Each structure stands twice: as structure tokens, then as C-alpha cells.
Image 1 (spheres, one colour):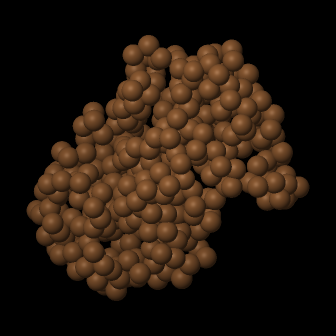
Image 2 (tube, one colour):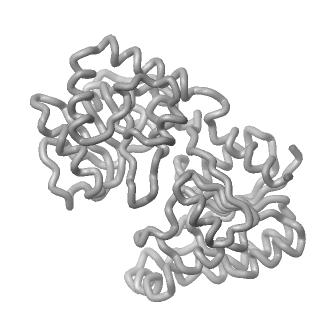
Length: 343
């Protein structure tokens, strides 16, 4: 491959998708440029109340959005990339699509959310969809909606893992081990949809239950220790030193798998996953007791697994064997995307 690629994505932290893709292109030894979509980088107005008010009344666009899009157009003109890869629900002006069409640059969206979810919905982004040459979705359930919306070409690619971020933790102190030990843990943003599963586990007595992420304080959740979101080293510790890590999907986001589907095993953890078609396909060969179909089923299987360490350890090893492969990395996903741009 001899590509030049423009990434339109967030590179503010190592775990952001823009940063993950940048590392992937470095691994592929491809020339790339990044237009950083993090608010700290391009939209300092969002640090102020007046900027947030403007954002709400302007269709989820910060004050600097127009000038930022002009910079993207200038970058495409100067850099002449073969591919522009946009991560997620980030709206663009027509001028961006026009310049790509004029110089023969393929413009691709890597879509990890459900764009019609009210929490994410951007009318301008939805109007953008039909102008993309290719939309990659991590959700099989929304492909038909994208096709109905006249997207030129849609393709399903599951999430993946980044070996830079997801690996077994090293140089761990005893203090860290003790701090992150848990019987069951969950890493994710607070969502009422997840409460029935978590409440079912609260009914099990004497367990060390830890939940990591924002927005849990507003939800009534008993017996779970609510902790801040974890990233990088602490993320790996939270997974590795938990006997079981939960893979719960969000139906309102049309999930049938998530980033955790890959990340738990890649960090050396033992995952128990909601029973969906995508989970069954991605984790083909995983033990039957590694999938749960209801809150009660989850509680029963977790109780059994916590009482049977041999089976639990075997399940952990099987998960790692299934997931930890080059074909499940984001670098592999990027290869597939570039190959599709050549078709």
C-alpha cells in the first residue's frame, strides 16, 4: 500500500480512536495527517458557558466549527490524500465533500455509534451520510437503515483492540493489585438500561463488585463500589485483577458487541458477555457459560463461575486465544478499509 491518509478524529488522548488509527497507520508505514476534532484542540469556546449555549442552538456545532472545516479543505488541497477517514459522528461542510469529489479522494466514515440515537443525533451529520463514499459500521443492526438513507456503500466491521493499549499489565505493585482486585467488574458509562443486570449481581452475597465510569452517581445502584473512569494502565489493571468482567451491550445504541468484546480478553481478563449474534460470531468457540441471556441468567452463571476457578481460568484462556490475533487489531481493520477504497 502506498497511501496518504487524512484522519479527522480525536487525538487528545492515547485511547481516542484518532490516536489508535494514527498508530495503525504508523505500523503500516503510511503517510498521514490528522485534523484533531477534540474540543481542547479546535473549539476552546466549549470551555465557556456561552460557547456551550452556542453549541446547543447551532445544531451541535461549536463556534469554531466553520473555520475548522475550512482548514480541513485546505489540508486536502495541500496534502492530496487518497483517503479521508472520519471517526464517528462529526459533521462536515459540503465543501469538504466537494473537494474530495473533485480531486478523486475517497471519504470514509468509521461509525461506532447509532446516529439516530437522541444522545448522539446531529441533523447535519445525518445529511452528510449519503455523501460518504463508504460508511463502516461496527453494528450489523444499522446497516439496513444506512442503506435506506442512500449511503453509497456500507460495510460492517466489528470493533477491534489496540495492542498498545490492551495487553496484560506489567510492573504491577502489590498496592495496585489490592486496589483493583474484584470478583466482578464493569467498565462503562452510567446507563439505566444496564441497571437490571447489575442489580441481579447485587443480590449475590459477599462479593467485591466494582464499577468504573462516569454518570453512575445519578443512578440508584446498590452494593457496587462506584469508581472513576479508568484508562491505559488502570484500565488494564481493572480488567486483569477482576475475576469476571462484564460485556453488557446497549440496545438503544443498537449494540450487539462493544469495544470491551475485544479489550477484556486482550488485557488478559475473563469476560462474560451478553448473548447476541455478534458476540456468538466474534467469540466462536467460547464456552456456553460465557454468555448470558437475562439478568437472572447472568447472576446464576457468575455465581457458578466464581465457585469454579478451574472452569473460569479455562474460559479466560479460551477468550485470549480467540481474540489475541493480528486479524482482530485496528491495524487489520485499517487494511480492510483501505482495500475497500481500492475496489
